[in-house]
Image 1 (tube, one colour):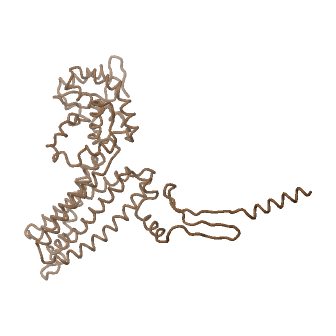
Image 2 (cartoon, rainbow, N blue to C red):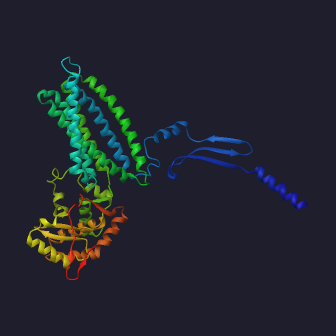
Image 3 (tube, rainbow, N blue to C red):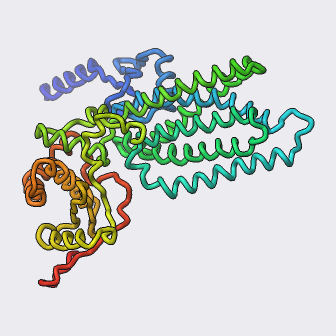
Length: 447
């Protein structure tokens, strides 16, 4: 009995001398947690705050502009891209005040001779042209925006620059006012379609934790702040340069040059992991030469972000093989001799494949099967690149290219995946022409 009482006293003594501590942490990600308080109960309850209140408030404000879990929840190129993108947006809104001021002056705002119905009609024609232009641009280029997101992102902002330039020029050509403002509206309509579509593609690229919606919302907050600052600075600049044409043009052109530079730096920061035609060609050629694959960051420094007709003079462009490949060729576009070659190759080389490759005037044409999948399109394009490469060194390109595909294609894909490349599909213009082939001798149809 004495032993029991003694043990009870020891437990009571130890419990009274124990120190229980609770720590409070703040943050949405385990990698970005901050200790805010320490609560101690020994023997009285005490709370010790950690960090300054300013830091706590600053973190709360920052949460309205960056995705939860930043920077671990987004790709490494998110932050530099957003910095340059915000700077180019700031310059855009400053110039918008100058171009809008010139446009309203040309319409006749502030003049007694101007009529409400006349100004309304001119504004209606301007908006109507932009709407029709957006529909036409979507019809002709909408399916190509994903495959060349960096290029179209840059082109969109260049077209926006052209649209604002037309607005600024409109007062100088009163007889052709409608034509000039409609041309500017048409240019900006291309901007709206291309910018919106490429932004969606880039948001998916940035999202590492299925947080595309959060990234899009925070990007909207960043753009709102840039808009407010740009409008305020634009109103100040418009007030200062009022009645001074040379100052207006100098300010506009200087901001336009900065806008183009910031856009170029923004898209240059992007290291996309999707495979499009040019990136696939760069990766393939390096693999053929070294047996290794490049990282997305390395390929980003090598690929072109300007349209091909601007960079056609570049010697680097000539070295790429994708210019020698045409994907999704129409069978009826072949002549009789070429059709015979297609039938022979279908029976000898591609009986079980979901694509056909035809060499015409040192160009590799790819004919896709009607039941081909996204992975088949990627495989056919790489196979065509192999043929284009071997065409310069060998005469039996069909056999050697097939041998290369059997030995190295899967290894190539595995090495790409190990460096973060998405090998599930090839981002290319849609393949709208396909074919179906049958071996009549065995009556086996390829499904």
